[in-house]
Image 1: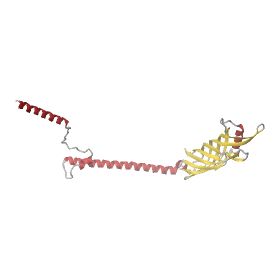
Image 2 (image 1 turned 90 degrees about the vertical axis):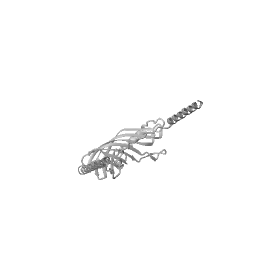
Image 3 (image 1 turned 120 degrees about the vertical axis):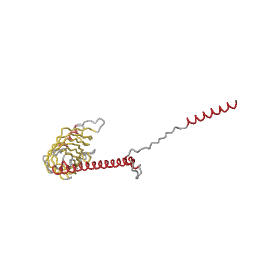
Image 4 (image 1 turned 180 degrees about the vertical axis):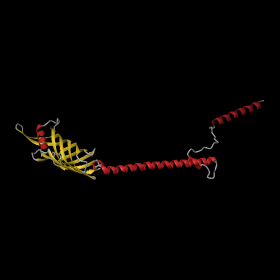
Length: 277
């Protein structure tokens, strides 16, 4: 009897151990269905070359159809690109045959020299139409003024920034034009001022001025070259000068000298030469 109970206990323990081992063992999934590649090329290559079954023939037809579609897509892409290139070439030929060079190469970087408030500098111009040209420029004029000893030689160089517009009268390479511009000029100032009450005193400061100009001239635009010669007149509508003290005190004595200096250079001749692109 006791032996029977012992065998039963051993059987129950073995059954529990077996169940626990089955639960701890990871589950595995098995599939007896072959995975078919989605890509027609890989699907066709998965069959043996000697396989003539309907499935293999269908895969090869799908592969040939895909290759045909890819070839036609590439041909259409090349055809569209060739048509676009032909249109671009035709447009370039039409512009070259019918439009002035100012349209073909509307922008230019030019150097200028001459007389006036600024007598040399750099200009950038842009022909927005065949008859309208916008330009910005920066220029200088080397000037000397009195130093602390009353002699001339101190640096009072003017610096001018400006922008303007020209109206080109003819749609030809060589054309007259008229223009207008706004300019702002600044410079350090040094003078020996003689006052009846204070006597001679040294004044040092900075001058500023704004002006409007009118111009007329001739321009040659050919190839990559841009040339122009113009006469211009500057109308000063503001002049001011301040001392170099903490408060930047306005100085009438400096302003008068500054305005006189600018007024002497109201008339000018400017020659510009540059490259267009």
